[in-house]
Each structure stands twice: as C-alpha cells, then as structure tokens.
Image 1 (spheres, rainbow, N blue to C red):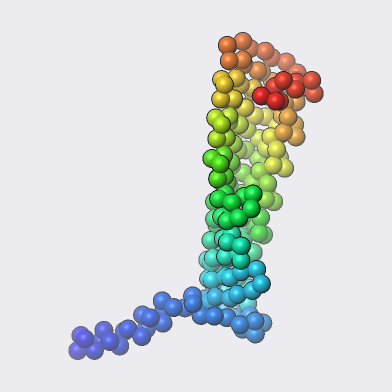
Image 2 (image 1 turned 120 degrees about the vertical axis):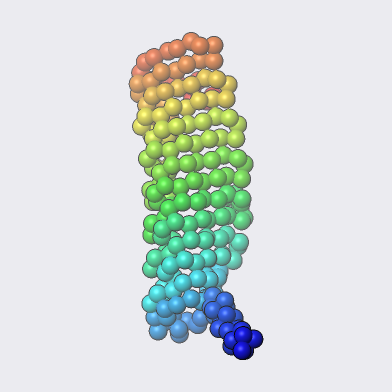
Length: 202
C-alpha cells in the first residue's frame, strides 16, 4: 500500500517541479495568462511568474548578450528587490543588488564593479542620489550626499595618501565651505571654489 501511494505521488511531484519550464506563446500572453512559465522574445528569455500576461512576481530575465536580472517584477518591469549582473562590454562583471522601481535602480542598493570599486547607498531613477558610500579599489573613499550620479551636497572624501576633505560638493567637484586635512596633519578651512584644481586632481 505504501509503495502504491509513492507511485501515485510521482506524477504530481514532477508536474509541480516543471511548471517554470512551461513554454508560453504570444497568444497565451494575449489571453492574459496567469501562472508560471518561460517565454522567449527577441531580447532574451524570461522564466518565472506571470499575471494577466505580464511578468509579475519572482522571475529571471536573461538577455541574449548574457546580462541577467533575478528578482521581483511588477507589470513587466524590474520592481522590488533584485540583482542585475552585466556579462559584456565596459560593465562586464559589474553587479547591482538592491531595490528597483519601474525598471530603474531606485531605493537602497549596492553596485559592485569588476575592478573592485563599490557604491553603497540610495538610488533614484537609475543613478546614485541621496546618502551613500563610494569605496574605490585604489583606496580612496567618499561618504556623503550624491545627486544625479555625482558627489553633491555634504560629504567627506579620503584619499589613500592620508589627505581628507570634509565639506560641500557640487556636480562632483569641491565647491563651498569645507576643511582640508593634509597628510602631514596641516588643516585648512575656508570657502573652496573653481581654483581648487590641485585638490580635484588628487
């Protein structure tokens, strides 16, 4: 009797395990398919959950060039928490882990670059925006505010050489009130402007 029950359970087990491999057609999506399945388009392959013919829920989208997103979807877009990895081009080996909104990096997240650089913090519409920390492979580090992917607002930049600037930034450059500490301990405070090329080029 026990063996008979096991045999009866086998088809159910296999059918549950293969639901993600169910290949969907364009017609099924047009009919507002809801469930799990795999769909191929010109850009790549999606494997995961669907709702009313849209990618919705947990899933994996693999692009034809190797890029991959694993995480949450809403109405066909990356939305919620997910991980995106680049497989080719200038961003090859880079990885973003964090929050998404309407297909863009948005919220808290970490972008790790293949060269060892790392950006941790807030994102908005695909760019660093808000509080964050950028740690570079060469030992330099920035902690502070960013806007439109640039250092902007209050922040502290520490060079691997031991020098440090604490103060205001604008459009990725030292601009405004701040304090510069040299490697030998010398401290200079003041209003820094466009003539501070020696600092910006360190």
